[in-house]
Image (cartoon, rainbow, N blue to C red; front, top):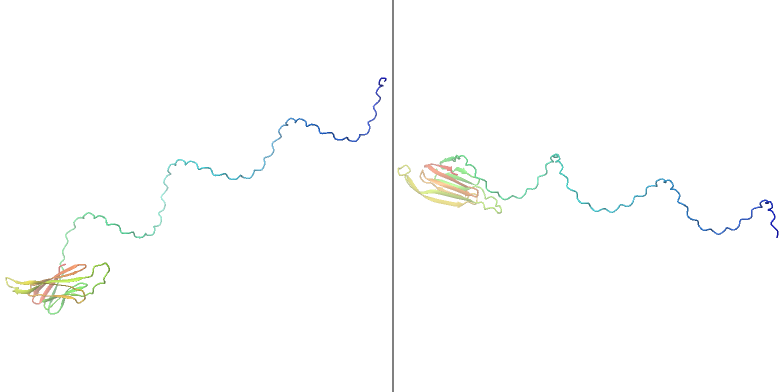
Length: 237
């Protein structure tokens, strides 16, 4: 073979042929270098509030603070209603004896004088009366009021008449030796209105003691025949 002749002129490019079949995927190339950080994006919307956590343990008690200044007194409230009365307390000890008071003055009871034959009232009590008659020769105590109503757990109502009076008078009341008499005692319990106790007097100058005892007090009177037709009675206490 002889040597190659000189290269001829290049002809015009012919039309593009149809695309050939895709070749197999080549192996993945190595990762490229990390690019620079992009600018920070805008802040996102706030998320929903999370559920409340469990209560923590109670902390230790702090030291007591200093006392504050006293506040001003408030206005007095209206008085409350009275409470129920409590039971009576025990009796307290006796107090010291007080100073002696001034001497008292004894006031003598009024005298009553009766003369004549009729009945005369010398003393009147709410439940009894003392009378005389026959020129002072007779004395009589009489109950005038009924027994008070009986009260449970209280002592019975009572009225006791008593008289000490002369009997068997002897002598002359105007003589130097005077006159004398024995004494007699009469008494009774007066229960009903009209119950009475009587006594007799003798010569002028003779006297009698009258006693009336009830559940509240004792009353005593004395009567003296001052003349054949008169008698005087006086309350002693």
